[in-house]
Image (cartoon, one colour):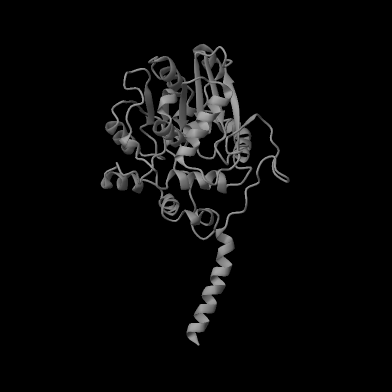
Length: 350
């Protein structure tokens, strides 16, 4: 009798739990009942749409043509794109895009590091950016740039990684170092990353249930260093605009945007970035990486190791700034001018 009761309870528990594990279908832009399409999009080879936004000088006259990949929870309107006057001074054209599932870009249930890199290549081709173009990725967008270095190195004219998020399970990290970096995260984030890596089918439930703390960034309570808090406080006057952009970023649902980002970014990759070779063996281009010493989101000790393993990366470690370094106007200016024009200027904080 006890065995039968346990079986009944188990079946009842599974019947209750299964629906809570399943994410709702995305509200695809342009579909019946879905959000409206408000900006330009291209149609990719597989039928998906990719939304984009153009910045700077016209691409027909631009000296530099850049594809920009936004961060976690952001979109093609990311404020990290350089001010218009800087782009005009450089003669730069920048196209930012909503990564799949974000904003008005169709979700990609098969998304990988490789597929987003190929999306960027197709975006460049459909917009006529030529045989080679520049790429930049900030934070989680940096993982798309690692994909470009792996899968389309022959298309790259220059590369910038700005505070790129690392995957603690990259094989190239010594176990003690990745553990040290991992333990610097908030306990709730350690759990969220474990779930994303080992049990991706639980990611939606984990980050929507109310029993345990979910990922701190999703909960909008990230671990921020004092310099990041200062940057955030300076943006307080733009709080309403920032809120609208966050709502725009996930308007098709959090699963194919935020949660898919976690599963792809912290899942098992098809390659280890630390095994990559320089895409510019003859010095015809350069790869840059910027990281703030006071970054409490992506531990600087891990970025230093990546730069050590890949000496062809020009590594720029910036003191007195955190993860939001590209939202610091002075740092942003130097990043763009160094990346594209090779200028080396002193950072002067306002």
